[in-house]
Amino acid sequence: MNSFPLTLKKPLILASTSAYRRKIMDQLGLSYKAIKPKYEENHSLNLAPAELTKAMARGKAKSLKADYPGHIIIGCDQAGEFQGKLLEKPGSFEKALTQLMMLNGQTHRLITALCLIDADSGSEIITTDIYELTMRTFNKEQLQEYLSCDFPLDCAGSYKIESAGLGLFSEIKGGDYSGIIGLPALSLISGLIKLSA
Image (tube, rainbow, N blue to C red; front, top):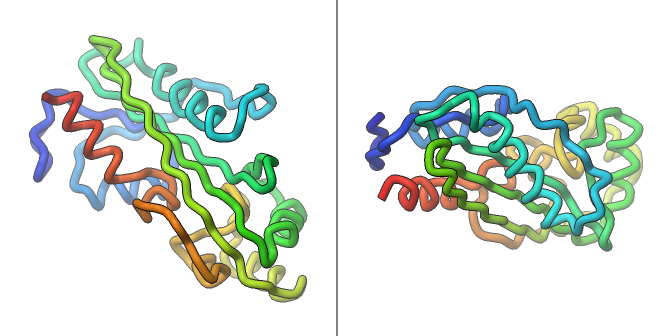
């Protein structure tokens, strides 16, 4: 259970099968199992985007709590917000293009929530990382070309910041870059240290 530079008292469960989140866990050298959460996402809840992402992250972590006693469960969720409107994973090329056209030349927020739960004690740590991203101005054909290149249909906001999508932006404000990808490593490490104290 030792993961440099941490000494963890309990093994980790990542309540996600996201390749992006697994890559960050691997980069940190953490030992873990990635398990699909039992939680059904509900984006129709009457919550502000930041509260909604926290509720989703918590729901994902809690859905595996009973199945994995003796573990720390990690849940994450991410959503974009533009002018108070929630930006979800597009799921289709057409919806992705519509989102990017809306964000074109504008500044929006990307919200990443993290929830850590000690399955035995029930102790929880929930954090939210918020980023402001300003997109350059493109024509429709350029955005279609980007989508054909990156195909970010499973990404909130319709871009992959860890890939060619980085070139869409003129400015990014926020703390931990890994949180834009989907799992804020600095918040994760801080939370694991607290739960392992």
